[in-house]
Image 1 (cartoon, rainbow, N blue to C red):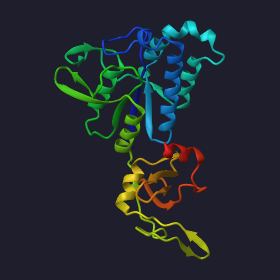
Image 2: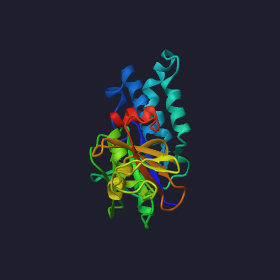
Image 3: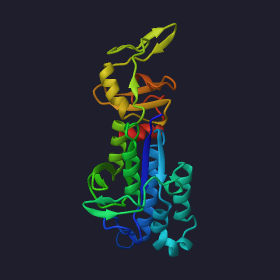
Image 4: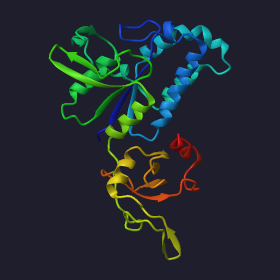
Length: 277
């Protein structure tokens, strides 16, 4: 089955190339170190319901932690342990355990040679995927100074473009447009389409789908939730929250939906807070 391949990259104490940001010059202060880890935790939480395979580079992690080793004794709960648990709990894989890139292949960024790093690994995996079945993306967590997509040239022939996500908003927007499989909206006759009134069937009040199928589909792309079986989004046009219900594991990845008031008990408090933000 096609999947998203998400590669994590962190800044380094001793940058391995000119595009990597330095922890010693930019993030050495204790509060910045802590914020880097906390922000990464939030980013993982934001995509916890997405379907992806996560990868990291254990040498990049070691390089990131180098200048912080002296700080570890200062913490009741060491940020190093938090970082390690984040990687483990989110089932990230060290790509160096089974690298695809080759040491006899020439990789370049902006005509300058690079080797033995995450840029090369993503580029080679994407190059090998001749059917374009999977999606590949870099989670650039304050690691790389390149602001746009990264173009890696392989053996001076093929240029491989790597999506380069630097901010939380970029990460969420990217998944909305590139998740595999995509979410698809399905009209449920019980809730209707463009229906404005609550109906009563067999003594049960049935909430309406106030929007069109097309409008619901757009909102489904960016809907959030604590698990994929139930998602939510704020419908500004109708000033209500639309609830999406998962219809089961099928290749179509279908959801149906309906509208509820913004203060409905059906909407979890943490989700309502995020939608209001």
